[in-house]
Image (tube, rainbow, N blue to C red):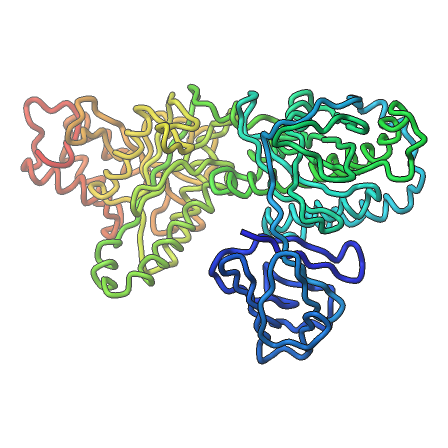
Length: 583
């Protein structure tokens, strides 16, 4: 493996990238990741690079406007070896085969110093304007980097540009919290190509990350001694500054260089003189951490926004999400929404699966939009069904109102569409909510009997032939929380679904009269009176009242068919419960 180093006319115009083996790469002004945006004399696609057996083959591409120079001559197709370079425009490209050596035997430093934040704050900059100019580029370094690899490359370049005495710099990572945790050099670079390997002090890095403070070592005059570890020639100091924050856990900045021209200083003065460089690096690390933390939170919120409403996300912003999302009991209102007509549509579009997926995704998107808009949580997807719930992670005294408004919004939007219809079941009760799952996969969802009840109610919408069904607890709360100009309810029946011993009293949730004039309040009153007559064994009266309901009301058909099946006479053991499903 080898690196290609690009150096433009300014110190900040630089990068160092690892070349893949036997994989052609395109070098150019707009050829990510091998782009050189600072040099206008380089074409968008200028040259093809191929690393093979330790040698780099360079071929000028036909669309290149300017030549490539190698050893002072124009060359269109040639090879170079480590240490060689070529030039395009004002940029020099050097092939380097310098390795990173970690864990080698290293000498003890003559001087070791830990710098606290308070000490660094009191350390003045000799040339603050230059430091601030370099730091001013840091936000752009982070926001314009397409990926972490690009970010690390540009951050190391920034360190070399801001620390004049630095010979090399790196961003490193310790993956774990103990001394056996693996240490990685994510990216490194040196100011001048030397051909020597890069030997960062692993002891120094681990000490800085463990103590969460900047630590400096000085090796001036130290015996280099036998062993695998040798400091690069001319390098006699190094320091490491940890990058704090949840988004930068285990990361640190490593800088090494020499006291060239300061030979008269004693060792104490030498290590003290590093304070300005360490202060600059600390400020770089703090700025980097703050900006990356913002990006981390934005990405986390973007991920959580698939499940939580903006109101919930705002409430969670200042809390540890892992703690908040731990499974716990809560009073919740659960909504199940199932698409109707999915099977027929899938049969028609069996040869057009992409179109089918698009239609189903759009339909499910309607449901999730209304769940989130009313402050709910999207709990799960079951094929062509969606489950949402309210009352967690924050208590919601009006959870029933929110769920009912979501259901009515879903119904109204699907009523205007022709591809699918919906069935919605809503139940309220105690459940366990949070991140639930196995060691391999977790999801934010809710678990308990109330979830099963909501699912059962959604299934019952097919039998009772209504769009939205509520259990008794939800219906009672809805009557208190929802005014008539928002929603209306009617009790349908007490039913016993197949496979359940305990009967369930179910009600239908309806839009207000202004939005659904087909059923007036008088119609609803007549229907509920019919239900009471049914329960008191006055079935002729029940039929008479049901006939006052419009003939196109399908819920009426459910009861009239049941009465007709029993010859308009209640059975001797009639308990007011209508069985539904398989007998």
